[in-house]
Amino acid sequence: MSETVMNERKKRALSMIQPSGIPTLGNYLGALRNWVDLQDELDCFFAVADLHAITVRQEPAKLRQQIYQTFALLLAIGLDPEKSLVFVQSQVPAHTELAWLLACNTQFGELSRMTQFKDKSAKHADNINLGLFAYPTLMAADILLYQPEYVPVGADQKQHCELARDLATRFNNTYGNTFVMPDPYIMKTGARVRSLQEPTKKMSKSDENQNSFISMLDDKDTVIRKFKRAVTDSEACVRYAEGKDGINNLMEIYSAVTGKSLADIEQEFSGRGYGDFKLAVGESVAETLAPIQAKLTELMGDKAQLEAMMKESAGHAQYVAARTLSKARKRLGYLNL
Ligand code: TRP
Image (tube, rainbow, N blue to C red):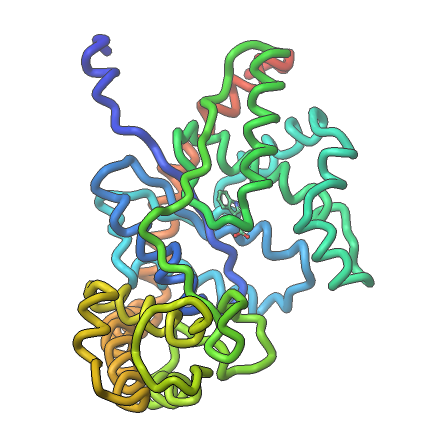
């Protein structure tokens, strides 16, 4: 390849999502939707992180269903297999192999410091397994295998990305240049969607209060009902201001789904009550989700087709991953026979 052609290689991005339940509106507006936009700028790799899922106990039949569903959801939101590589992690064995090579270059202390490990081991005290502890080395392998410049993630994954960078640096310095240094790519445009019931907290699908989050699969009536019950304040004025966390959250959601500015929204609802506003937010969110849900249902209706797509993308992913893996193996002293 000539130098000019090489310089024209699009920068690469990689991100993954665990197949653990249906993502929320917050996951969609804060992260997933932005992946769709990245496709045109960058050479994108997106995957279902199903190996990560078993760091906490999973019911096999349910896990299988969620792998199909999460893969289908990535396609349903508009990730386009013609533009991006959308694949399933467990179909690419190189992830587990590189994870071992990296694990032997990761310190106990580094993994002990991970806040997610501390949180999850407190939450699952009866199952603090080696995989839960080693999870960041698997994630580092996910990333480094594909040599991406960018890793679009939420703030909660920043610490894991930092570790991936540390491991890449250490490996490159110790054994010779092998891995591209990935930068976490914290989305500027992503909305920070908060709980509808406690608007100072992040919207979370593991919240016990079902009314606090919108699932991407909630139907129109459910969406409207949940917004109707959203916590607001007693001012009865739709304006974005400090101390109005509930209304600010609804305004940000409405802005994210309609593209209207906060100022336009204030104007649109000036002199109108919260009831009107909540209904408008609910309707526009339902309208945003409806085509995704329809597409998901269609895709889930043909498992054979989904499997064919998974198989095809896994082949491409294996090809890219194998190049990095064989380089890393060689650097470490292994034979590639
Ligand atoms: N750990 C991430 C999460 O729970 C998912 C993930 C796995 C990931 N491997 C990754 C994200 C690689 C970015 C890059 O959200």
